[in-house]
Amino acid sequence: MAEVNTPPATTDRGRATNRLLMRAGALSAGVVALGSVLGLVRDLMLAGLFGASGDTDAFLVAWTVPETVSPLLVEGAMALVMVPAFGRALAAAGARPKHHPAVDEVVSATFARIVAVLIVLGALVAVFAPAVVGLLAPGLANVEVAVDCTRLVAATVPLIGIAGYLSSALRSHGFFGPPAAIYLSYNVGIIGSIGVGYSSYGVRGAAAGVSIGAALMVLVQLGPYLRHIGLPPLSWRRSGLVTLGAFVPVGLYTLLRQAQVLVERFVAAPLEPGTISHLNYAQKVAQVPLTLSAMAAAVTFPILARSVAAGKRDEARRRMETDLLVIGAIALLATAYLMAFAPTVIELLFQRGEFGPEDTVATARIMRVYVLGLLGQAMVDLLCRSYFTRHRPSWIPSAAMAVGLLGTGVLAVWLAPVWDAAGIALANAAGITLTGLLLACSARGRLPSAPGAGLYARIALLLVPTVATAATGWWLHDLLADWRPLPAVLAGGLCSTALFAAIAAAGWRFRTVNPASKGER
Image (tube, rainbow, N blue to C red):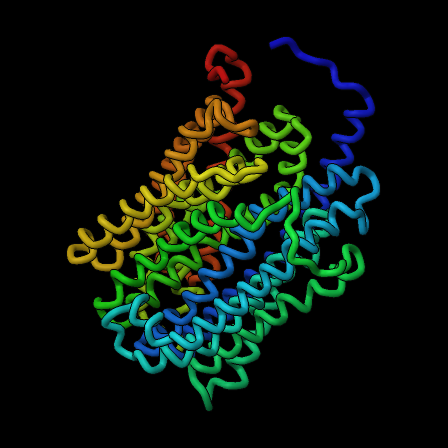
């Protein structure tokens, strides 16, 4: 295809957009990094005060409620439906988006309905908490504690939903700071409640803190939302820009996505007490790199949605390819590093108080397997955006996720009796990778922002530095066995990053000077 010269005005707009994205990404990454640090502090407090026991298993079963609601109503369905809806409204508003009738129409037609549904769902969780616990974890040792904790976290359903709505609206309008701070606020609430209620209420105090943290997620965004967007008269009428029916395919996909955790805990519940806790700690640590990179993707999602709404196919495709390449590289680097240094990382973070050396060994063993699915997770979370930026969201992500979830369930049931929790982690990695491959194959030629084959070739080439870094890291981990955990973790991270970057850069240079080696789009 012939190259088209870009007009100066378009180039200036592109540069301005890139500067905006860089500033917003830096701000968001900084705030999210602080929130992630507090999340680790939260997990350290839980591990140190309660260890990996029947009580922590009970708390984590209850925590499944906000863990399901948060991906559904913050990162998932709410964002995947409302960001494109606000994007279409802002495209209609043009250069004067503030309090534009098109934006007001979206809020009027959706906010009241969404909040009403979420309040009802939260009430149902509280009333039917025993059934919820029985469904999530049959055979759990401390059922009474799990039921109490589930009732305490039921308020998170409407609160996190409102926080997700405000986050989608603010990000669509170019305000990224308050949405980035929601998990910082969330963890502040939990940590404060654990500190205040530990001696008197145990894990129930932590459960109450989850709902307090969810309320803080709303409060940190409410002021900016009212200033910049406002709350128009609420209405039950429909809008041509968005319908609640659009939530159905997106919501189903997000529930199926989160159901991987439900499958893990369902299969792990009859195993040794503490198994669910080991799985949880391994998952939380392994996902920290993806949490930071996903925040950068959240910054670019409104730009992607506007590009699709405006019919700018090439711009949308470039945005998607850039996100996939960068976040895929981060996922593979994290995979290589954590496979090698998992025991030392877990020892540094958790081994104190009630969390002993045997817990470190069990958690590290799980994490070394779990990280095999990080690239698959990144692909799924990014590719699904291509399907949901259209006016009518697609059912394909739900179908792909259902196939992957089925694979996860079958493998988990088969492998758990043989490899215990590590078998469950391997099933998780295999299922999510299968889903990513299905989405990638289905998107090509079907969606305006679908990446080209050349992008996947570049990601495949990154497997070379991944394998080399993992092998070298394993050798280095043994070499540093006598070091204290902190310097060993830092040295391993620095060496792994440098080696991965050097090999990846060498490969990029080779492809640059050898055009014949480049894959065709």
